[in-house]
Length: 287
Image 1 (cartoon, helix red, strand yellow):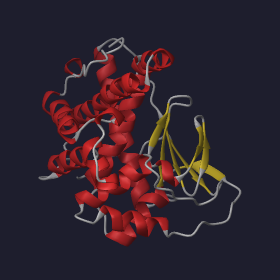
Image 2 (cartoon, rainbow, N blue to C red):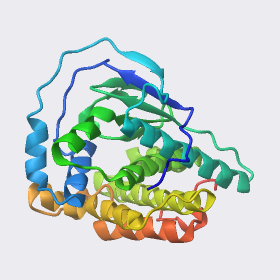
Image 3 (cartoon, rainbow, N blue to C red):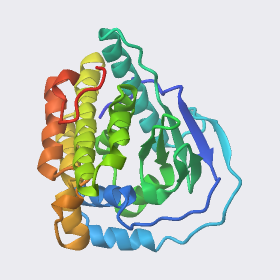
Image 4 (cartoon, rainbow, N blue to C red):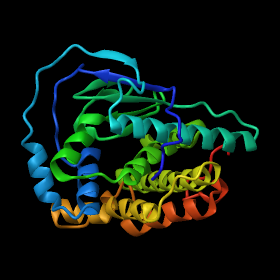
């Protein structure tokens, strides 16, 4: 993945301190990221999780916040900022084609822990999008430890994760997320999980749309990048994650879709580059 010619986003905030170091792997998104990276880079997921659990908690610190720049950014932060800038360009153009205005999301790069509009954020949560403050949250230390301890260096698999979270921002702007949330109280957990799967698969599709359109605007893909993205989509399938972490598959507990579904929708988004083809069963909101 070639991002040397890409600019860094102006919408990234760097936070340090502000919370206690606490990595947990009890089944949340943090577990998902650990397992997906372990599988992509042919590590034993169980060994990776055990090693991460052994990281000692740090002391609670006062947080500081500043704009992310080339001078204060780590290599991972530079890469993630450039990916965000690419998504800004793609989605601004896409919304303009529909006579709509794209409101760019913010991104927060933090370590150890920080407050978000959706509550306290920590490494155990992994990357996530908060619709309340319209920001993507990335814990740099989470990725740094995986890279330093296990040699994880695949930039496009990480870019896929960021593009997926930005996909949730697009869904938020289009009213798709709020529609789903409004239905939650009227649905059983099983019924809601089915809709949650559709939402996640659509975010995978939107990540594929980004890769398609970004590469046309400013070519950045290298041979093998899309395969890396497909591997990432496959590795975070609910069926594969459940099998790796618990030894059994429980379809009624799916929240993100199977490996086959995630690969299908990411690939469809990349091949079409057309948001109008991304109705996974929950509609396209006001697109």
